[in-house]
Amino acid sequence: MRWRIVPFLAVAVVAVGCNNDSGDSETTTTLAPITTTSRPATTTTTTTTLAPLEEASVPVYEIVSRSSEDNGDVVVVQLDPSSYDQLSDLDLYDVVADVVDQFPPVYEAHIVDTSEAASLVLLEELDDEQRALLATHYFVRLEEGFRIVYVGPFSSAGTAVLGS
Image (cartoon, rainbow, N blue to C red; front, side, top):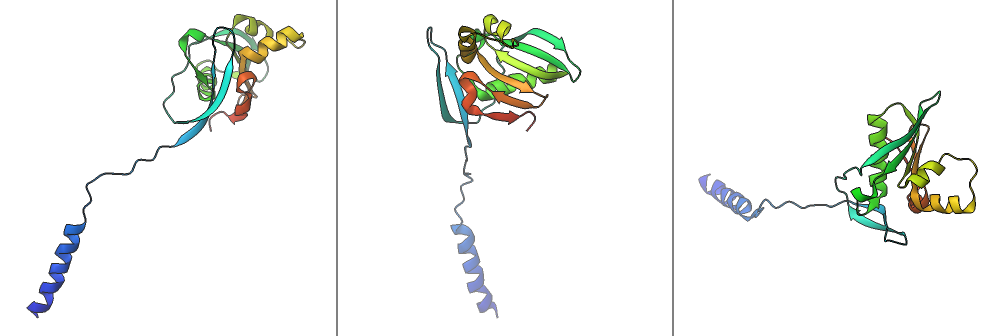
C-alpha cells in the first residue's frame, strides 16, 4: 500500500514545484476619452484623445456672479487660465462638482475663463461678436442642479450627470 501512495505524492510535489508564480500581477489601465483645449496666444485648438484615468486637480476659479432663484442659486464661475496648461472635460466636471459641494445651493452654473465671457454668459440677446467670444471662452453649464452640458470648445464631450 505504501508503494501506491509514493507515486501519488511524487506527482503532487512536482505539480506544486511547477507552479512558477513569481507573484507578478497583471495591470490593467483603463482609458477614458477626454477633451482638452490648448490656448496658444491667438487660437484655440480642441482635441479628443484616450488617456489613462488620473486623479485630476481642480483648476483655480472664482465665483464672479451669484443670484438667488427659487430652486437654488445661479452662479457664474471664472477659471484662472494661469492655473492650468491644458483643460479637459474631466477638469470642468471637477470644477462644477466642487462649486456645488463648496457653495450650495447651486441650481445653475456657468463656467468661463475670461471676465468678458462672464459678463455675457447670462445675457439673453447677443450680437455675433459676443456669440463668437462665448464660443471660445464658455466651457460648461450646470442645469437643474445635476445635468452638466459641455459647450463651446468642449461641446463634443456632450452631457454628464453630476454625481455619477
